Length: 217
Image 1 (cartoon, rainbow, N blue to C red):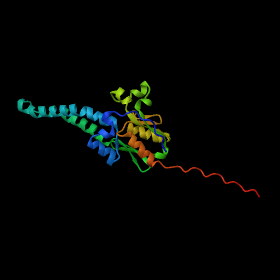
Image 2: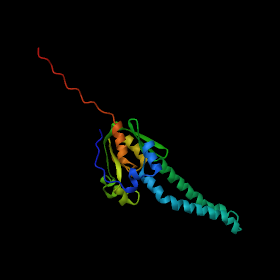
Image 3: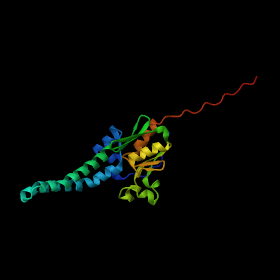
Image 4: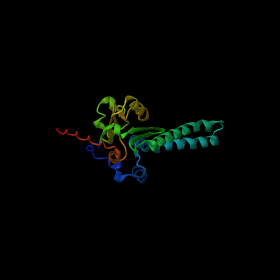
């Protein structure tokens, strides 16, 4: 059994009971728990990014009508295309970044990369604030902004009992902001639900049989 810590209260916009319909589908039906860093970054930048990209393309479309310079529209369309490319990348990251329990593994998925951590290699797991592990300047520097908010956010916190090569491969998928030594700290949608799924799928180790007593002749 994986011990359950005492989680801090979740933010109102992150509580499972107040999630949007799409978020409920991710948490409930597919059992995919979206990574909050990617999700909140997309929410924060999508409107200004798409607005600037659209304005840039509209200007590029109208430029040939008011200017006699050939190729002006093509040059002006490049910033818009670049901004749309950035928007697509950020959208894809928040769409494909999640944690899930599949069989006896904790699956970490981000973009096109996927790593599976056997639950038997999870030494300890709990729900705790990000700041409980990210507790010094060097570690806090890896967090996205606003850092003060993320430090108070609940995250799945897992201590891994795995080899160094596996940890290195996991770091390549997630990056420095999630893995601190052997401790994995990932703020996700419904971290308590993910922890319950881990508990339900963790292999149970049978207690050793008591030694037999020898009979005296």
